[in-house]
Amino acid sequence: MNRLLLLVPVVALIGCDQLAPSTPPAKAVASATVRSEPTPAVKPAGGSTLPAESSAKTETQDPPARPPEVEEKKEDPPEEAPPIPDTYKPLNKKKTVFFENAADGTRRVHLMTEVCLREGPLEVFLCKFNTKEHESILHVDADARDIHLALIAANAKPGTPVQYVDPKTGKPDYKLPTGTTIKVTVTYREKGKVKTAKAGAWVKDMQTKKDLDTDWVFAGSRFFKDPEGKNPDYYMANNGEVITVSNFPDSMLDVPIKSSKDDADRLFVADTPKIPRVRTPVLVTLEPVVEKKK
Image (tube, rainbow, N blue to C red; front, side):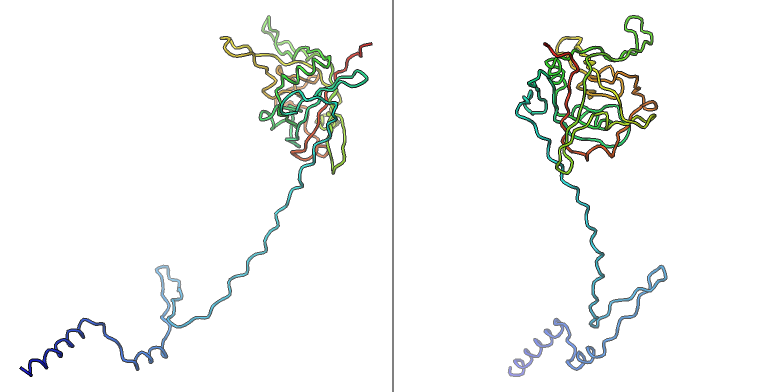
C-alpha cells in the first residue's frame, strides 16, 4: 500500500513532462544568445541575392531626406468691382443691369460683368452667363431681354440681324446687321486704380494687327415662337450672343462689318496684354448714339 502511494506522484510527474514543452537549459540559452549568427542570404528565383533578416540587433538607419517642398504659386486676389454711382438704377434683382438718365439728357445702360477669357479667337465680346465663355471675353449674369428693354428705354431702336439668305427666295443674300449705333466702353480696376477704355481696344484684328475700330449696332436678335403656343417666345440672344464680333442672326449687338463666324475665317482675337485677369469685375457701358431731344 505504501509502495503504491509512492508511485502515483511519479506517474503524475511523467505525464506532465510529456505534455509540457521542453525548456532548454539555462546554459544553452546563454550560449545561443552570445553566439547568434546572421541567417544566410536568400536567393530568389530571379538569381539576385536578397539580404535576410538577422536575429541579432541591427542598427537603426536614418530615414531618407525629404525633398524640399515646392511653394505653390498663389494667385493675386481679384480686384474689387469699379464704383457704381447712386444715380445708376438697378433693373434686375441681381443688380447686374443698370439704367442711367444723366442730367444732360444722355441715357445709358450699364452691365456689371466679369472677365472669363483673355486669349484665343473670338466670336463674342459679351455673352450670357454659362453659354459661350470659350469664345467671349466677358460674361454677364442677366437676362438679355432686360438689356434689350433698357436700350429701348435709352432711345435706341432695334434694327435687323445679319441676313445670309433671302427669306422669300431661299437664295444666298448677305446683308449687314442694322440698328442704332451703340458705343461700348469698359470700366475696371487695375492695382486699385479705376480705368476706362473702349471695348474695341480688347479685340485685335488678326489681319491688320490693330484694335477693333468700329462701334456696334442694336440688331435686336430675334424671338423663337413655340409652334404649339405652350411656351412664351424665347429671346435668342440668351443663347449667348449678347455683344458679338462675328455676325450672328441671334446677336443683340453686332458689328456693322462683314465678320464671319466660321472658324477658318474669323477675324478677331483677344488682345491679351490689355485684358485684366480672369474674374475681374468689369462695368460695361452701352451708350446709344441718338440725337438729344431739345
